[in-house]
Amino acid sequence: MTRKYFGTDGIRGTANQEPMTAEIALKVGKAAGRKFAGRGNFRHRVVIGKDTRLSGYMVEPALTAGFTSVGMDVILVGPLPTPAIAMLTRSLWADLGVMISASHNSFEDNGIKLFGPDGYKLSDEVEKSIEADIIDDSNIALAEPRLLGRAQRLDDAGGRYIEFAKGSFPRKQLLKGLKIVVDCANGAAYRVAPTVLWELEAEVISMGDKPNGFNINDGCGSTSTEAMCARVVAEGADLGIALDGDADRLLVCDENGRLIDGDQLMALIARTWQLRDQLRGGGIVSTVMSNMGLEKYLGGHGLSLVRTGVGDRYVVEHMRENGFNVGGEQSGHIVLSDYSTTGDGLIAALQILSVIVEKGRPVSEVCHNFDPFPQILKNVRYTSGDPLAAISVQNAIKDGEKRLGADGRLLIRKSGTEPLIRVMGEGTNDSLVNEIVDNIVSEVTASIG
Image 1 (cartoon, rainbow, N blue to C red):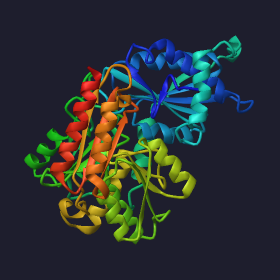
Image 2 (cartoon, one colour):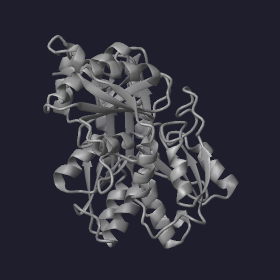
Image 3 (tube, helix red, strand yellow):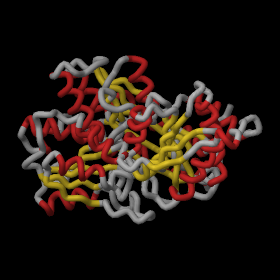
Image 4 (cartoon, rainbow, N blue to C red):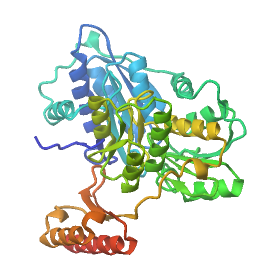
């Protein structure tokens, strides 16, 4: 069955337009609730969190109505990071967890991410089953009046996650003496992230911590790091930490304002955990987007880089199936399964900070582990059709692959979360990579018309 609603990271779209309408959210609640409420003869519960975008006020009550209508109790926790919802789902023995967020997208968009009782994102098969009931909900039995679900707010949810995150940091270490700029993207971590760092005795300079429903990811956070990098230099800080709207990814910048991406951060964690005899799987799991320089660095230390399709859920699936405990994406999704079931920007940041404290050297030295191959990524927005099916585009791709040969690679794909064609080129020759990417982008743009 072709997937109508679910993409690579749940359901996502423009708020108040299908699929992100109150009507669809109601159907999601009914379908997912019925799917998981049949697991036993006991009261069933779902945890619902959200980020700070305005449309959360529309989606949250619609989901709540759907879940309660099939007899499921709802626990509302308000704005919290996506990994906090995964954690609370397990901690509260809930049947299901829901995060209302469009992650790094602007406020106009929103999304629905679903977690199973184990705190992991649902499999493709389960999502397909739920989607079938969203499309045709005639077979979903509504609860009798006396069996309707109840909804309540969990006031200490933020505090629970703060303690959980701090528990991943070594007990004998503190962040005393470190000046840290943290950019919360005006998103879900605007309270918890600065609090965790402050309680570990860092000097904290907060940015992106005044959400108003419209400013999430707006010139801030991990998708727009210029202001954070400049602030680090201006304040003479040791480093900067940038989270995205739902705080499941992060990027870091050093004391010079130089950005450090997810590949460098995974390299640091993998090598550190290898030396501590903590790394499992003999390497890490990442996606086809990760730089060839990361692969070369890991290989030099006897470690492997296993690549999956784009999307942290595919990284996690491979980690679980093959015994890895470190994985992630170049964009900053870092999954450390010793602590969390999904990408957690704050916990990953704490692991990086632990190494910085341990080594006592500047962040520019600690976090720069390899020289990346020149890599160019450009996006082309489209409205309909399949630009990649055009013969001119396919010929441009074949020509580019031939010119790069064994010294590089191309990755051209549709985004799973936005109407974008992503064109990525990588190789040893910077100017050649640029030329090839620009040629493919031109052909894609021409095919759109």
